[in-house]
Image (cartoon, rainbow, N blue to C red; front, top):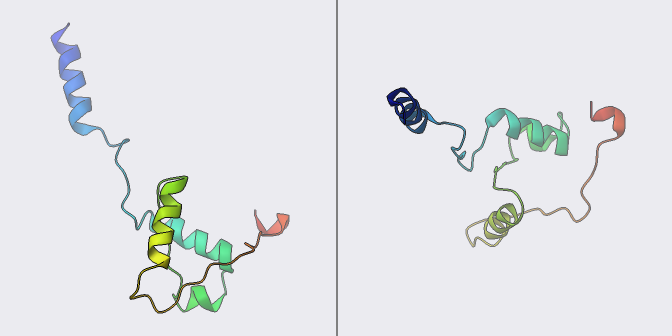
Length: 93
């Protein structure tokens, strides 16, 4: 194998950033947009900063984390909406 190829591979291995995982706080702008989409931009839940957003792995990873949060004994209150609300088509844009 060419020395230049080995050096390039080593560089990519040391500087790779695409496989990094985000922490549970996720991307702040994504969390903010998600809260506004779910509750409405002017909702007291959003404006009073009562909503919390966790970014989790897809599928059961998110369900597991949500379930653990819900059953934490030190939590005063948790809200799980049985019927999620979807935005009207014109509001999605």
